[in-house]
Length: 313
Length: 313
Image 1 (cartoon, each protein chain N blue to C red):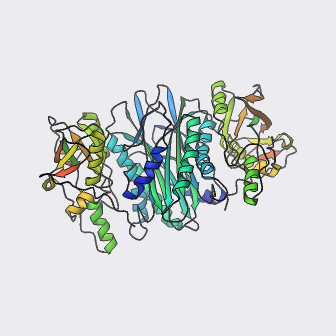
Image 2: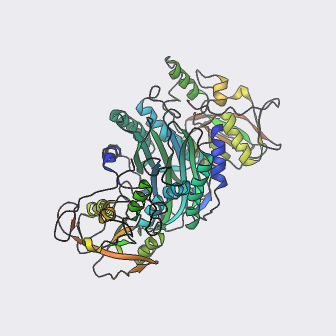
Image 3: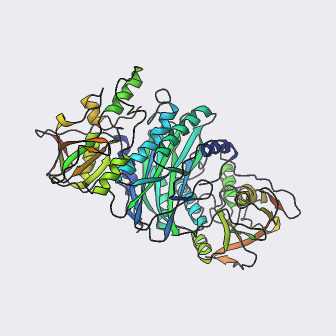
């Protein structure tokens, strides 16, 4: 990280003022050329980065400042959870337009830091700059740690493994639709504006060694399950009747909506995965099957096309 | 990191196609929810992030695509060098305008990867997105490793320590001026377009334990030396006659130009720092002195005001 130009000092002051959470894994945080992270003997480090672009990942007319800050960090925490790691530190690089709304940015940082505090994540660095356009751009890095060779990956699913998802799907897309239409959100919780990363489930799965493959659902079940198929060299068969639907969501939203940040994992046929993990419901939705090339099909054999996540734009 | 929307697949293909350098510290690179980094027993990890915004950190009419890519990575490598760490992995998040010039981006990646290859840095992840404006925005993370408690920091300089800089100063600003004026650059090397991080000097200083404080010169000597003063609770007295001037640079550029990415460090009075470290010239430019509040003064006592780095805009 570099020192600030004079125009950035106020911004950095605002970021530092909101940095309250400490993590014992951070020996040196904001203020030197690099942050310094301690790593326990026998552990390895996981790293994820996510761009959060206004107009694509959040909209100031739909998402509150607190929601935007929460969502920017939640994406990275969800990636760390999917590996079965414990988050340690976050880094926030943010480019703000000239004359940005300071109150809005304080709200953004409050949303970011409230989520960071819940998972003991220390904001350990980042960078600031002036965006040339009108939109806010953020890049969030989350670093976590876990015991060597214990990370859950997309590769590892085998023919016969059960396919599982946590929580319910489609809520993020359904709440987004309500925001776009300006109608009151009648569903449960706030899956779009304040998604909760499944940290405890990820840690439990890692410790028990149940999952043969795991990832988070960011783009949508239809796309993300295909990623596990591609990485593992198997196909997936999904029973649409078993998809856990969020209240207020359609099947289309549950399959393709994305941004639910639930965990998607596979487990060996012999493993009896509990119906609840770390107080979150877990549902078996299908089985990994053989066949050439990555493919997700429904019971009966029809291909479930990857709908993927449609950007806000 | 998340999977790609369909519009980003081509971009990711271009990034992956340019990813050739491997580092043994990277167990899992691009392609899972997180990258996984191995850490040797007894080591700790350093992390730095730098925003690279078109129009502020590079200009497409002044910098070639290769120069822009090189510069984006060089900033982070220089931070890692200043800590005395060895770089392991880089992460590149990039937001490109709709309809970006693919040839330009290939050049950007070629410049980035050529520098990465020189220091065995593996591009282990990142994210891509579509910028809503006309400008390219990148955020580069560099992660390094070194033995526990051996990192050189800004804090640690004491009264009586000598102040040293590597190489020469002002060249980056002087070459930038030539680019802006459209005149041929008559100086030595390409300090603006292809700055070289002082990796070997940083490693040597760390191993020998000579430096009481160290940072890289990114904003300019006058600003950066003040950072060491502020962190260490001392003042600095600089002899202007001893500043190593780059060929073609003015004293103003050497003091305030910034972007030289030389190392600035302090060493105890009793330590005889060689005139060359890892084939780079080292010059003593002053002495740390006592006094309240961070202050850089010239011989005679007049304050050297922090000129800092002026953004391109």
